[in-house]
Length: 145
Image 1 (tube, helix red, strand yellow):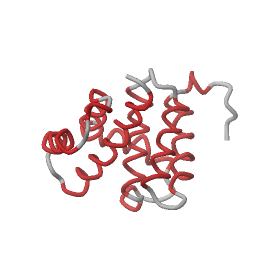
Image 2: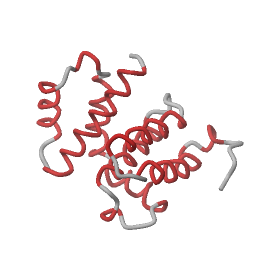
Image 3: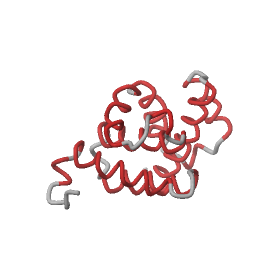
Image 4: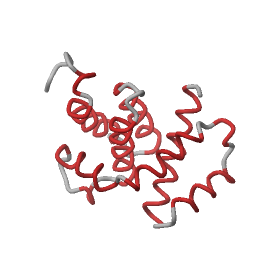
């Protein structure tokens, strides 16, 4: 799968996870709806499914990884930003084949598209700090803040 398909899968996963978070609907039901409502031929469907199923499955672990780097309680973080932080954290933990810089960049770009005015800066800051912990080997030599 190419970069464009992977990017589209992240975008759809963000939207599906947002729906899951707001509605409390079953992930399988949301996945089925997205498969019908979107042109999945242009999507890395396997990656979309992994994010959509994996993030709710690992939710408490993801939150515990993120929380030390937040400047406010989880419930006070914008819902889109929180989903993007969870997606980025999930990818750093479970998709070591994706370079951490790509994970951060993709989350920042989605924040610019779907998030608040300066949300992308917050996403970048938190994921950058998380990368130092979760991808220590890969970030070695990167300037520590």
